[in-house]
Length: 160
Image (cartoon, rainbow, N blue to C red; front, side):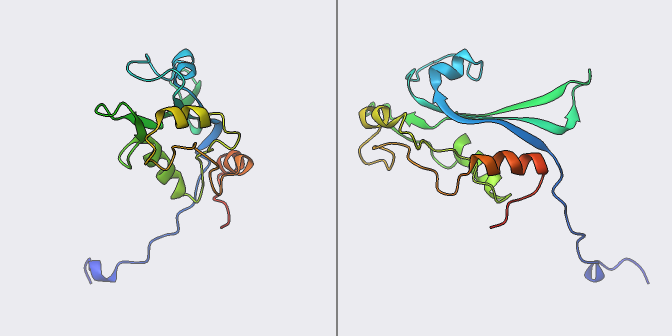
């Protein structure tokens, strides 16, 4: 009997490996992002604009010299409408949505939100009143910083 794709075996179960340890998951200002080397320059961004910084260390990879592989991700949360001069939430093709969805696939809510309201005043002054974030970024439902760090460290997806 030859190869018959219709009689292929069931897929072997996949295991989630220890890929990374989260070291930073916070919202900072764009000016802070530039100071920390996360952005090259302010360009047309407001210095007080929110920037989501997500950084982790790859646990299953090493540099050629044996050093750790540090991964930086994140980005601005808002984009400016050139016609109105007001900001609006980045659309789903932009980095914040893509990062959030990638981790959601692992059962992790990685977006920290802004429960202390650090960016509420900036949002009220700069975000389009029709945007859902006009009054602030708010609390990220389901986010648990300890769970994010623990999930990465143990390499297990959280129970839903």
